[in-house]
Length: 224
Image (cartoon, rainbow, N blue to C red):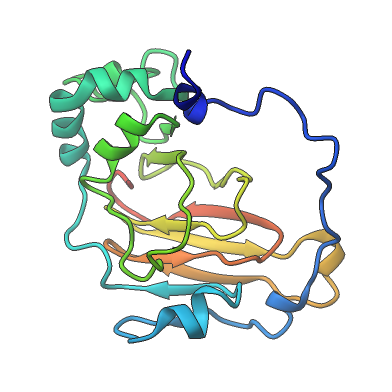
């Protein structure tokens, strides 16, 4: 393989000189609610680099429906299949991209799907419906991996995965989700739990909150 082919792979060798820095609680100490920065002119100098969470309600140009995902998969199924790193589901007969995006319907309204993508070609396809938010600075690196969550109206709450990058954005395509940011254990005495209701087209930056992010469904339709 050429060196460039390794770009999409997980780390093959551990770096013996790498270690986790001690967790700093200052980014979440004074957070009691998420700031709404919709229409704010200067994200970079004021918020993006201060590691605090915020919400933007005008970054996604349109609602992304389950039907849109079906169309996307129909047009780009080869790239998306090859770019699938993990596909987890709550129903054994509804447990592959082909099953989910065919005419088959989930047998229960509590279905849950987590789709992880970690290939360049597949990430480019996903960007067609979930583009890079305009408030992310051009000189800021963006991780290759993408996660898509599809949830029935009665699906249970779930936790977002821990990633290699502290700042994570979550986009709501269709339906409503309650996002709850819990501080990590070392910061429990310094920081408070905060939550926000994500509506269609909303983006949230979780910032360096340092803890778990769990998601509760509040929709009467499939949430994307």
